Image (tube, rainbow, N blue to C red; front, side, top):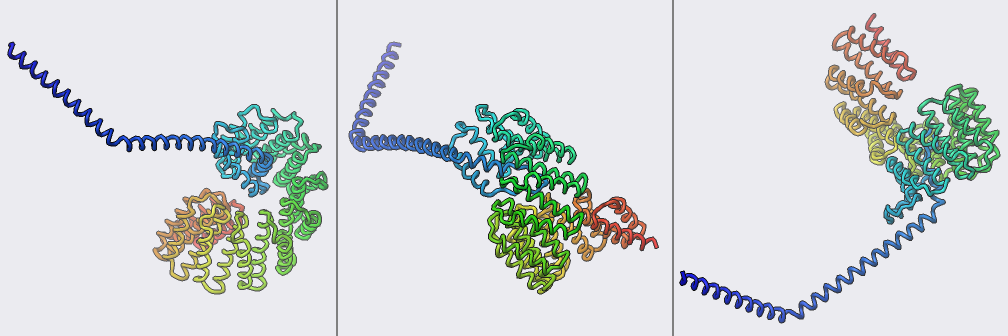
Length: 607
């Protein structure tokens, strides 16, 4: 036992001695390494300290730059507050039936620039004005949900002045309108009127008047023109004698919309009386916004006079309007003058033929050809398009093509949706005339160029021309290469536009399916053609668009013809009877024509 303890003790002594020796050797080695690398380590530590100091300075400098940039951004935003107010007045409009919904590009650009400045500010430091400006940017980019949220955030600041609070509430109503939530928009407008209706400030009164006007638009959508007229009358009763230009404009707009609603309810004669009252009240007003409403009233009066008394008296109204406003500097008024001259050209063509109409269009282009206003440019483009139609009638397709080419040359790069639509229409008509002169192959090249130029366009009017070009391409491909290749064109059209919500585009999809049915019958016989027609009816049977309904009716007529060849007259008569049952009371001339065709086919089978 003692021996064992001694051995263990000796082992421990040996272990501790070895450990001590190892530590000593390690310390010596570490000391030697540090002595050997001291200079290098000292330099590296110094470098790291320098880098850390530089990084700290960079962070401080960055923070300073950010702070200065945010301060500069805030100053720039503040300095443009009047521009934001003006931009809001032009951008925040509901989609109403007056057609006065064009975007003011200058206002949109101003908002976009200031919105970029806002990205330099943390949202936590946003003012109510900042939230409002960002809401305008969302609104202009059609992000109406984001716009509504920003407008609500702006309105949540109870320290804002009354005019600003009223503007933020009004903006919420317009965003709700664009979201299709008219009932909620009316609640917002009513709350605005209740809260601010007795305020004396001109800026607040204008927002109250605008809220009442927009309420009228939404009431018309939800409840019809009769109740909308009540709202417009209340607006005129409240603000009819107001001296503020912004308020007077809303009164004039209310009277204009009342005229349209009266026309719907009671016909053009009573509408003319409303327009005359508007002109009597505001005819000498110096405010551009009010003058525009007077000009619009005179334009609409011309339309109603044409309905009641014919084109000659309508021309007299337009001539008086041009005499009155021909030298006006306001873009909105100039647009109405250009529209009057365009309509005068149409009426002159009816009365005196295309040659005199061309003279009217040329005079209009001479007057307004260099105008920078989007609305005026659209009328100039429309005049050139109509000139092409009249030139084709007088001088044939070759000279018409020259007119269409001139239109494309002048406006081919224009950013306005209305102008782009006229360019696309010109290219489509050029395709028709090229087909007449040079055959289908060259026409296809024109249609392909149209699709190449405008295939991704977001404007419904332009998309319709693209779809029409593809339908006509299919027809021309069929004549050149046969039905199989034509079917491929129609299928591509349906693939591209099958879910489009625009009535004009839907009509072209329906036409493509109809034409596909005709070509399928040629290739594969009546049974497969019937399947195509059934698919067309299944897709569009409940469509409200007259053009689409016409294609459904045509499909049913052709289905009857194919059923007759497959199954005999009895089943074909059942198809025709179903068509008459579905469309017998339809008011569209194109649909009624197909009902007549079905009855004719049925008569042939019965006899």
